[in-house]
Length: 329
Image (cartoon, rainbow, N blue to C red; front, side, top):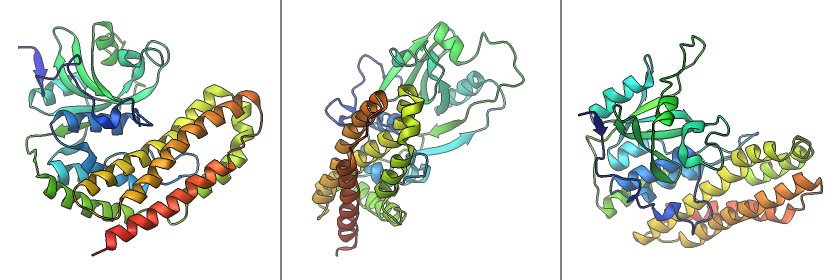
């Protein structure tokens, strides 16, 4: 048997996205790593809303916002999922056969050039680094099932050979891409109450690591200085900047709002107003991206001071309400 499938019943045509990735949310696609974890945890029949408290520590890092990822320690405590770095010392396909054959999935950086789900953006158009989760491998048929962004997909044939570099000549300068193994043999299915209790403790830890100063105030100041450079660099560069900045902030705070509403549904009090504020940040981020694109394409002033101030105010108030809820008896 050439097929190595960790979740053999999973099919792209029957895969159902979690509501966090539906078209009704502000940011259906967040970032490649966070998205694949939402999709994978959902595919396991677990609740990904429980793992989202880590977004409370989001910060503006100077040239970008935090590229947010669910910590491996949180995944273990919540779901019994174990994530470890994979030492890529031989071809990635050989590692994939080894680990999928043993019931472990493989998360790996990949070139979106070979990913058909990115048709219209990167697929066969540009070489872009992204992260996918290998779940179903058939070497004889040259077919791969994988989680990426907000869905589960398959690729085959030339895309399979390109992804695994089967037709590429030996290149001593090629650096192996980062990869991880994902073990689910100790999967835990806690009750909603147990999951809420674990997630509440994790949320308290992540809130303790929130920025010491308002990140949106610092972001607004930096944007004011950088706008002329963004206008000079043009729209292509702007979209790269917007992904690293506004998209990460907007998507993360939408997830934080979802997490707080999930906790409120488990009986936690005092979270609804904080969630409303973080959702407002997510919506403002969408407006800011459009305003920024117009400013870059036209060369005109951004005129987003009120929008940015509102995001800063919502962060300040939301964090205050969240801390009060965490410390209430």
